[in-house]
Structures are given as structure tokens and as C-alpha cells.
View 1 (cartoon, protein in one colour):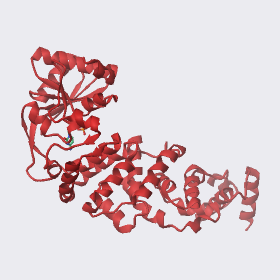
View 2: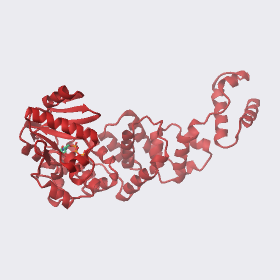
View 3: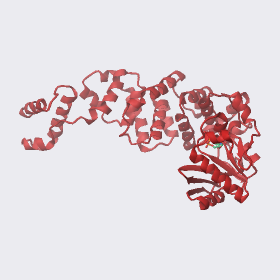
View 4: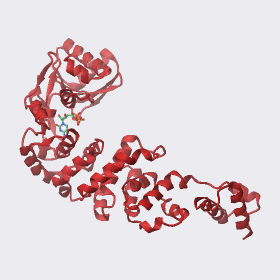
Length: 416
Ligand code: CTP
């Protein structure tokens, strides 16, 4: 294996690579490492997932590997692709293919084709290089290496963004992620693709915007998309560049101070939900509604994003009063909604209240229980809730600070 490539791969990835190479030799099949892993290796970055293109049926090839080495294969019949899970790694196989787009923004029809055509169907020159496993030769027909050294994102042909407008979002993501600029013809072609963005399904837009939320500085990509009029093309506004910068700064600076353990989302889901919050917070009802109509979310995330409409417009003066009153206002909102408010609201008192509500107020319970009230002879009914709420509020407002003080307060309340 090429020593620089070996350095970019983990021990398990090298094991996967060597197994594939040996199996390809045994079957006398042309196999190529393609896409991001080649680009990452040439940039001296650790490689992400490995993608291979084979000049035979990819599903058949992956199943053969599974028979030889074990693991599990998931096949995707429509595009004749397969994923092989082995030694803890997901490795993707595609059949070397050309693509035709029946209509702009639709998914392509694929036909098996030699590697040259397969590379030409790809988005950018830096993603259109392949390493032939048999002899370690780099196939770079579109000067991807030149673009890596010029630090440029360059599409391969004028129809690239009309065929697949998600590539507009990808261009911004790669430019932001690597600090590259977008080559001038590519920039012009992006302009031609804008009209087709609204033909994309919400699922596809969501997928690519969430990939953006996952890079270290998403605001760079979002600001580029804003400059390119991408959001205008969707008919939706987003915050100004300055606000986007401030919001993603806030995420990087503060997120770890918030206990997220009891928010029922994975880390990636949380990062995505907060990214949507950064786009939607304080945006105004109309634009927020448009985002929510376009992008499909799980019920939990959707509910939190919808509730931002109320949270962002609550007057800051409501959060100058007693903690018990503030907690009453914030209690109906989910932890995710409070977290987004805490990250992005302008009012320091509202932010502090959102933090306290989640970390302290919500969990506060008086020492007295319903059973205690019953033992004291109070007749069960709505009065129980009122009494317990009064005791809880007294704790929140610092009016009682010990079990004895709470008992004394309960005596007073019962005597009334
Ligand atoms: N691709 C494309 N057009 C798209 C999506 C993907 O041409 N809309 C091609 C690119 O050649 C890309 C490859 O498919 O390199 C695999 O796509 P993906 O897995 O999204 O990217 P990676 O190459 O793995 O790069 P990364 O995940 O690091 O962005």
C-alpha cells in the first residue's frame, strides 16, 4: 500500500483495504478507492469512511467479500450499491457507473460504465479522483490534485448543479470545511442551478444542511449560501451574517455547560436540532413557518422549533420577577427549546431563567408529599396541588430554606 495512504488509514481501515485488494486480485476485478478518502489522504487528513467503486456488480462483489471474511452486507438494489460491515467499519461499494438525470433535481438513472465515466459523474474535481488498488495508480482525470493545491472547489461541467442542486449546498460545505474558494466558472454554474433548488425534496435539503451543521464552522458555509442567494431561491430568509456568526460562536463556547443527558437525542441529532434553532430563532413567524413546512423533523424536534416562536417573543421583563413566576412561564417548554433559547436569546435574564428552569427549578420538589397532607387530615382534592405548589414556590423564591421552615409554612397555610 502507498505509505502516505497507509498513514491516513486506521489499523482497521488498512485491514479492510488489504482484504478488498486481495479479494479483487483473486477475482481479477478492477477496484478503486474513490471520493472523500482519496481527497483526505492527498490532503494529509485522516480518511473518513472508505468508498470503493468496482467495475463489476457491487452487490455481488460485497457478498463475495462477506463469504470470504464474514461481516454483514446491506444491499441497495436501485443503485446497485452495497455496504459491508466488517471489523467495526462500514465500507461502501458502488458499481462503476454513469448517471443521467431525467429532470433537474430528480434522482439519477444509473448505467454501468467504466471508471472514467464514473469519475465524470461526480460533483467536484477534488472528489473525482480514484486509486486503482491493483497497481496503486492514482486516476486523476480532472486535475483534482491541482485544485487541492490551488485550494479551489471546481465542478466538472456546467450542468452539475442543475442535475443535482444539492451540490450547491455541498460546494459551500467543502469551501467552509477546507477554507477553499469556489472557482469562478463553478460560481457561475451555481447561479444557474439556483432555480432548481425548490424542486428538491425537504428530505434532501435537510440531509445536506445537517451535514453543514456538523462541520466545525457551519456559519462559514451558511454565510456563503446566503451570499449566493440560495435561501432566497427557497423563498426563506435566514439571520444576517453577523447573527449567524454569533450564534455558532455561542454553540461552540457554551453548549458543554448545558446538561443534555436527559434530552432524548443522540449527540448528532442534538447538533442538528440546535443548527435548525440557529437558523430559525427570532426569524419571525412567516419565515420560521416556511422552514418548518419545508423540512421534515421528528415530533420532538418539531415541537421544540415551533415553540421558539413563543419563547423568542416573550418579553424580557417577565424574567425580572420571582423565580417561581418565571418557572411557571417556562415549565411547558421542552429541554431542547430552553437550550436553544439559552444559546440564542438576547436577554440575559431570559437566558438565565431558561438555564435555571432546566437545571434547578424543574426538578425542585417540596419535602411534604400528598401522603403527608392526607396524614395531616387535609381532604384530597385540587387543594393538594395548590398547597404543594405553594411550598415548591417558597423554595424557588428562597422563602423557605429547610425542611423545618417548610413545615412551619405548611402549618400557616393549613390554618388559613
Ligand atoms: N457525490 C456526488 N454528488 C453528490 C453526492 C456525492 O458527486 N450529490 C460523489 C462525490 O464524488 C463524493 C462521493 O459521491 O466524493 C461520496 O459522497 P459522500 O459520501 O457524500 O462524500 P465523501 O466523498 O465521503 O466525502 P465527505 O463525507 O468527507 O464529504
